[in-house]
Amino acid sequence: MKDFVTMQGLEEREMLALVQYANLISQKGVEPFANQTFAANLFFEPSTRTKMSFVVAQRRLGMEVLDFATDHSSITKGESIYDTARTFESIGANLIVIRHQQRNIAKQLAEQLQIPVINAGDGTGEHPTQSLLDLVTIYQEFEQFRGLKVVIAGDIKHSRVARSNAAALTTLGCDVFLTGMEEWHDNSLNLPYISMEEAVETADVLMLLRIQRERHQDQVTLDQDSYLQKYGLSVERERKMKKHAIILHPAPVNRGVEMDSRLVECDRSRIFKQMENGVAARMAIIKNILNQGGNYNEKNFNQRQAFIG
Image (cartoon, rainbow, N blue to C red; front, side, top):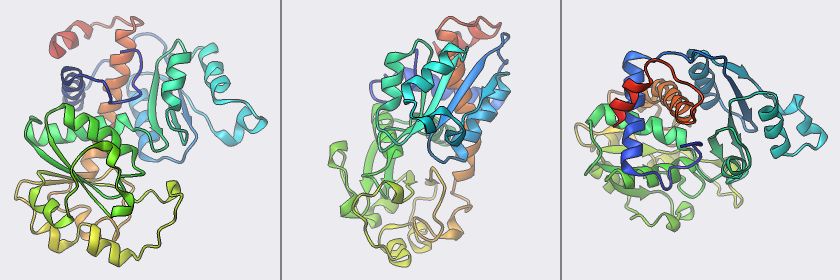
């Protein structure tokens, strides 16, 4: 693959290869690039986990990070996103990572640029690198995907994480269910909705979502305590989960809203493990993209190809 902008259209074998490669990196590390390599991180939206894990991943791979801040760029002078990205391409960036509030912007840039583009979140579109790290976390727990029951819970309508994971998990053979308040349903995903009571008893993996207040056009007045009791993961609901079931959340967590604060680091929570896996997942994506593009030929590439094959 030249770019990594969506989970849509990836085959099961491709996803499993990336998951297994990221898992291998998390266990054994990987050789950095032998040649000087530049990564341009274009983050137009606030980010802690995604941005910093990309930076750590890039530096572990020996890359030079070309950082970017909208307040100190020519965007303030009216420069287009394309011209900004094209500028980084022209001065020698080997890949671009972009997060932006405009849906499909990463796909558009990928079609216009010669260098690879990685989607770090595009509005309510997709968040494929978050999906990959979620898949790695699930794989580490269960060592397979087929037949697992995964419930995605919360603000489905506005969540790019839900969209990417719904596509990826279905491709990998999971039974995927959705739950959340009716105003935030997204029937375009063509997956069954169940109640939160059913969700906690059904799920092998309960994937909670943050309420995406910044993307709501129709503001819904929420009482936090009421939301937790009706739609969130309370302590009482957690006790009804299967013994082996795990909790995921892309974070940041609105403690006491999507889930009781006491559950954020409980025994079945893998939230901080997800963050840890985020670095390995993003290293795997970068290595896969740049090697398959023919730019590098480090000594461990043949071994990796054998592992994936």
